[in-house]
Image (tube, rainbow, N blue to C red; front, side):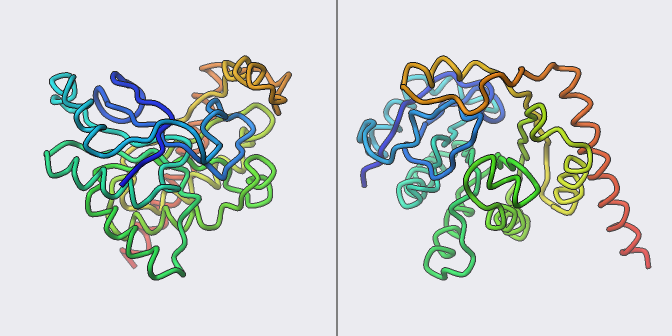
Length: 256
């Protein structure tokens, strides 16, 4: 099986626990206004790689990943190439290597039995999912990424059913994803996920603007200032407030 790979990073430190071997997949249906990898959107191009070739490359530096690290699939959107992803993670787990999937969950469809069976197989060989929830409000989500979020939120629930550990990631963009009520709504939703292991609140930055210019693409958020670290801390506190409220309700319901 052949995978279409944009690039590989051999010493990733922000793509899961420990030092990671990070495989960037080609192709993504999302059009996030703040995307810093627009060169991964196109489904074509990139390098054609087999699983053997990727794992051989992994082996060149495997000693750096053995203490709490592993292999991460990101993109683009890895779930676009779910068959290749399943093969890659299956072979990786056979070597007892930690597998992490960085995804938006946009490709998930519960009403397709054949596709759902593939997700079931993927869950069996996935140690951690880093799930990006772009916006909790359905209409604002469409404005921000040009895709609905109902299947993404359903994917989060599905992972909880499968008890696959999840880190929720949320980018805070000034004036777009920093509204207090929406942050607490997000927290309330993820507070109901029994598999939630971590929350990463990522401050919006403008470093992708130069890449858009080089690609000849208009930058959608031109003029939007980068988020400060203090603003990110405040935003995270609102999400945590929502998490606590949901968990208090769950605890109270159990005690009734």
